[in-house]
Amino acid sequence: MKYDYLIAGAGLFGSVFAREAVKKGYSCLVIDRRSHIGGNIYTEEIDKIQVHKYGAHIFHTSNRKIWEYIQQFGEFNHFINSPVALYHDELYNLPFNMNTFSRMWDIKTPGEAKKKIQEQIASLSIENPKNLEEQALSLVGRDVYEKLVKEYTEKQWGRKCTELPAFIIRRLPLRFTYDNNYFNDPYQGIPKEGYTKLVERILEGIPVKLNTDFKDLDHRQLAKKTVYTGMIDEYFNYRLGVLEYRSLRFEEERLDCDNYQGNAVVNYTSHDVPYTRIIEHKHFDFGKQPTTVITREYPQMWQQGDEPYYPINDDRNTSLYEEYQKLAAAEPDVLFGGRLGMYRYFDMDKVIEAALSMADAELN
Image (cartoon, rainbow, N blue to C red; front, top):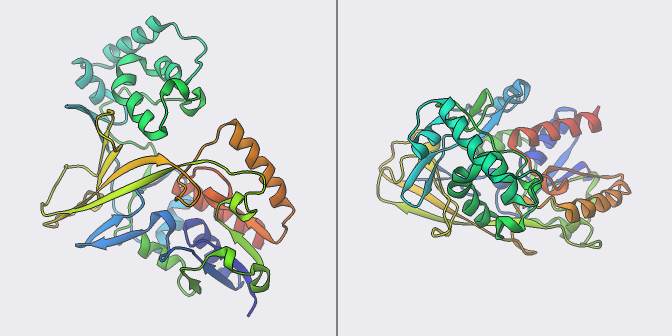
């Protein structure tokens, strides 16, 4: 059988495109090199806890149409992301808000906080930031930068802030209210049955082959067209060079206690702790189980063969991606999508938007 579309990647982008194509009467085959569907939003149930196997994924959007679309496939809870940060023995609320500033400077009013921050920024006299450190200092002042930005960022990127380009931090939101809601989006939550069940419903009735590597197939014999959501440079056998990423390593632990840290996400912002954060999964769904599962998250340098997480969109990689786009344009029967195919970091709602946009352009 020759399918209308071969979808390479059973993550959110590929699954949404496949659903839309099938709704229009097209035949699809979805493949994935992993042993599971869902890509990086895959969840696995342990002790009745939905464990986010590839890091915390909190769905949030300001787009009502996207919120209504995704709710077709599963009921969402009312989880609000309110992470906290530990700097040595000091505990701070995130995002940077009045709770953060009150703890840091023993002040109470927005006027006091604004004055403190502006005084610190003015004392530094940074007019044209030359690197990430200067950029951050010019936005939030020294105290917030040194306790909550500097060492955390250096762990994330594996380089000193003075060696990182300023554009990585275009802004650092400061909120002068006592509001710990990390996202401003009006629609937020997490699927009550986990993301894997959500993707199962998106893919319902669509054939899926797991443990199947795209490069082992003759895609033009299998389907009239291909939607490729893997790394665009890998598709072309890296002929122009390798696009760079940051990667992550996860260390998961099941604990015989009912509550390890009291919050879903705790960031560790100092160098003396090697990981950047601990996720306690049960708090995503207000769990009351007698046990708990935590995951420590370690950023690491990406090498070919590692799982790519965060594109490094500097000048060199952006130029290289543009060259790969030219090659992609010469492949009329292949569509490139998702964060790897488009070399762009996407929040989940933006993944769905991009998949629906491609489906609309391609299928109508």
